[in-house]
Length: 372
Ligand SMILES: *[C@@H]1O[C@H](CO)[C@@H](O)[C@H](O)[C@H]1NC(C)=O
Ligand SMILES: *[C@@H]1O[C@H](CO)[C@@H](O)[C@H](O)[C@H]1NC(C)=O
Image (cartoon, rainbow, N blue to C red):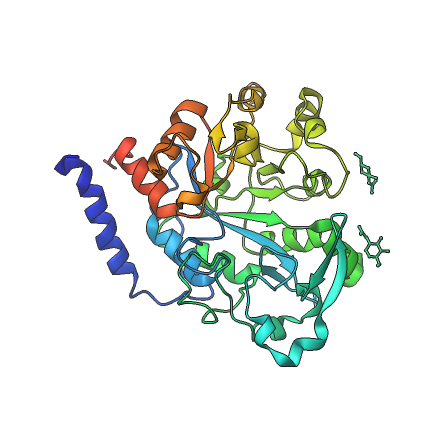
């Protein structure tokens, strides 16, 4: 590796050192239109899955801010609701694995069992806590093999706060919110005037000026992909907002939460033709594109080719640096995994827990042209 290759890394570390002194985030956004470095659109999108959650507890402000420092094109979030109908960023419908709720004796009586996606789940659910109560909890790292030192230090953030972090970034950074578990949320939370969860998400996006089709001038100013595993939610909001949407596709064994369809059904040619007018892409679990047996990659399926032939992008999830997530053949080297997916499989975006690694790989292998 020559000096030319090391230079971007050096610049990146200077950037990180410089950004560390920035305040957490400012509300409301002080950013001025047109003065920021634009979104790169010449190489696959670096989507910071729940922020830089390989380093910080997922979906917290530090996790998102770290991802922005490290070069994310998009910061990704799961949107759920509190009991009082405030939209929040949190992946699981329950709080057990990623907060310190178990240490809060005052909430001991909130434990419930709900049927979620055909399974009975017991725990502490976001829909049984008001926003004020949720804000007293501390987020914690999901995986025991990741850094635990931030456990309990950062609160759950709202959808509004997440958007503010993106808008306050020193360059254009997109958002990638997921309409998470809409069937369950619409069952449990009721909003005024018969508004649904999906309506509230769109209302919030409109409040902050998100609009415009993929690559339009409005979109490039405030890039966004709206994602969901529930096709009915994407079809429903397509009448409300023209922002690009991505249909998520789960593991082969999991039925869709809204229409109870199998993996084979939703990846068929007929279904891709059906969903195509509503979305710009699909977001499949990566092991369903390239099946894995006994930790070995098998022959890739034709899902990427069939999506591309319909002009649909493919943004697979989730790329993770740790040895236990890297399949045999990548020599325990996350760069080789990125190389395979970007240059062999030809995906258009990647959801990664380690935005910094993906960014460094892309800077080394396909640096952006210098601005004139
Ligand atoms: C969940 O529990 C309820 C009450 O015990 C039961 O009626 C229901 O069948 C269970 N659902 C599943 C999917 O196991
Ligand atoms: C969903 O479909 C599966 C078979 O594909 C069936 O066994 C199950 O009963 C269905 N569930 C509902 C709620 O319709």
